[in-house]
Image 1: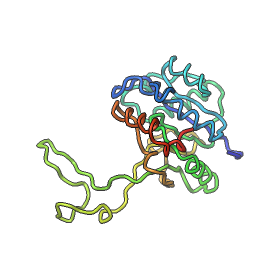
Image 2 (image 1 turned 90 degrees about the vertical axis):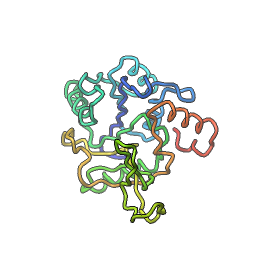
Image 3 (image 1 turned 180 degrees about the vertical axis):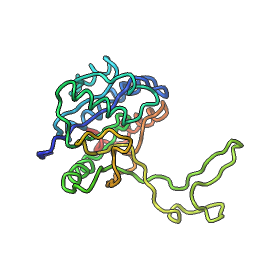
Length: 238
């Protein structure tokens, strides 16, 4: 993107996955999973593509695909219970130690999402540059709104207003969205608190396929099947 702003794409890829061991480097259609986010960042044309990882092996793979790994992630930010603000704290500390300028914007590319719409992420970036009132922008996709909670007795209760009916149409509940694929947020001044996205967040809608997340083997196999047999998803791969 043509901008005077300094923009860093971050691919957070720790090595300690339990649901699917080493999923971030598991080969998906011939390429390690994290490579898809790196390739997307290349097309996005940001200033730097940085992989945040705790693994020498992951680092070598990321570098081979065109990312930088100027430092390895620390133990605290690589734990099972680490949150993204912990990764941000680690990044800022590493930037200081290695004399790396803080970016104006972060583009947070979670490697477990393979499909992305380039124009949507470009819009997120452009809107943040244009409108200083915005604290962040997120890609969002429509989600099922009729969700239920299962209690300890395996009894279902709706977390939406079912109006006392056994069945209700989705359009009568309203439209809901899920996030977590790609976030764009500010990097200056130092922004590593628990509310790093801020309170004025723009949502940019993307197709449902861009909301598919790999958490376990079943997710992995589903996306692998789509890549191999569904031509329509190829436009969301870079």
